[in-house]
Length: 204
Length: 204
Image 1 (tube, helix red, strand yellow):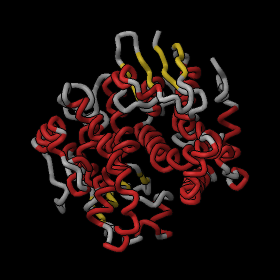
Image 2 (spheres, rainbow over the protein chains, first blue to last red; image 1 turned 60 degrees about the vertical axis):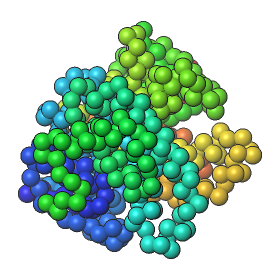
Image 3 (tube, each protein chain N blue to C red; image 1 turned 135 degrees about the horizontal axis):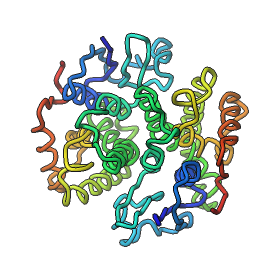
Image 4 (cartoon, one colour; image 1 turned 90 degrees about the horizontal axis):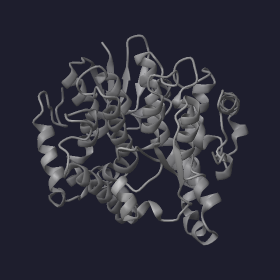
């Protein structure tokens, strides 16, 4: 059975658990505690030289990194990847937006505010105003889209929604006020109502 | 004819020009001078609320942002996107790696060192050591892969190579020493020898 190397509280890891559940992909889980350093061991770096989870390891030794690439692999040929070429491109557009313009701000703010020890948090405090401004800008881009569209790519729920849901639904842990983004808030509710949805805390 | 909103010196824009040329996709070009602020006008934000180029605009008004999503759209169903599902996933893995672990360091260092006015550069100088360390780490991950593989995804040149080539081949403008990464240097040469290759400076 494939093994998903993951971190329970990480949105990037949660994306993969959620998608796996919704497409019926079975795998075992190996949890890496937050800030344990266990993704930087020689043994782990041999599997992913970039030293990050999630990492999906297959029985033949093949390893796939990058949460959104794993989503694509699990969901290609399922309804979670749009059938039309244009919608597939828009799906990837939002996934790259998520990794470049959303995660580095919304997720990093959450990490600093909720998961770093107090002393480390104090050292990063100077970075917070800029991170929060950029995180709110990303939420604003989502709000603009969702004010006119139900989903991010095409006419149905896709892996673009999974990718953006992962850190958006816990953005409050980074101090973001989602009530300022009503279309985003309604979309979060729609995502959570999809068949097979599991919460980030689900231990599998 | 589609219109590519782009910035000549930007690696993200260059990716799209290079791929378009190699797959035979014809489009007009509109150049946005560096730091002109022209991607933040209301007119541009109506096309891309995230305020960035490259942006590919079609005659029906449809707009596609995010360089790597545009690559996928242009190259899907061509030999530049691998035919095997596993290779497609690895192709996306490297493209997400590029946007998350490479571009924010290698490209940003280049921007600070080569394109910012002297006064702005001085303000960002404190950030350079960390950016350079992370950029070198990304080049190291590429070196590890290329020491054993000719290309990034599957057995031939793909959009993953285009995505990573764009900022790697000008990394020296950010102060990176590519002679420390011999497998990367050999791969850069292979990419530049592909049919239809154009340099970043080509004005089209």
